[in-house]
Image (cartoon, rainbow, N blue to C red; front, side, top):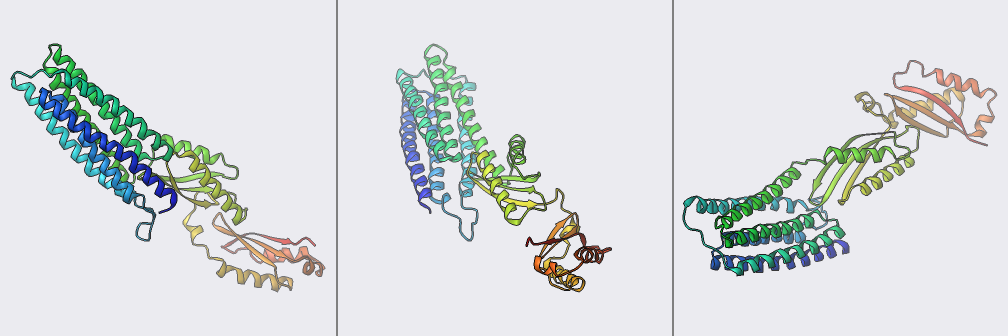
Length: 380
């Protein structure tokens, strides 16, 4: 691991351990107080807090193994370890929610007298709200600094616990005010919140595993930014997918077919820079340079330099009587355009250079492979 990834892993572990310790303390306190005071809502909220420990465990596991550098077997890294673990976590959360909701609904429908919680349950619920809101802000600050989608998700998971405690607080207060069914209703609401969290985590993780790309609005924004780059004539095949906190992107950009290879490479570097600036997530970007908007199969079947260059050079020597200095081939519009460069010294010894160039061009008439032919003379 690099020094940066090691420090990121340490920071992630530290904030997650603080959150896990808080989740454990709150979970035990809520369940104990809820059982002692007869608050089903607070017990459900305690189970919710303890379920956050499972999320914390996933984050710790991902921080240990998911931040490993890419290797021969995993060239894109190991971040999907977190994704797979999150799917299992989501299933367990939905199971917990079903159990809590079923139990609370059964008590509501049984017609039995529902207990009235004591004042201590109000205190425990209030402490939970304040402490979980604090850990939310603590985790979110680090998530923004590290640009970690995983930590952002864990921060929102903590805030959901605070919101569920608000629901429980209202339910307990309502029960103490003479509405005994509100505590059980609060338990059902908390169960629904847990199920929603589980569903959201699972849905997003499954979408990542099947390589779902970014939404259309974000893709349109990316295309507009790329088209605005000087030298980029068009953009197509912009594809994205997620892997943990990363976004993997590949794109084909159209450039002028007459530019040099080095200029084309410089444009690809600029495309990478612009995409990286547009995406908040860490990115892995692959840029393919095209010289035509729609590459046809015919252009892909054109012969390479090794099959063309010797014949072109030989034809020039037969016409001109001296060799060419340099030969450039441009694969455009399903044909090969030829740029032949000759030295000024050799060209100066010829009495009628224009006639030689004309005969050379005419020798390609009817050739199905060669398109435009130009002869360039070095400056003397």
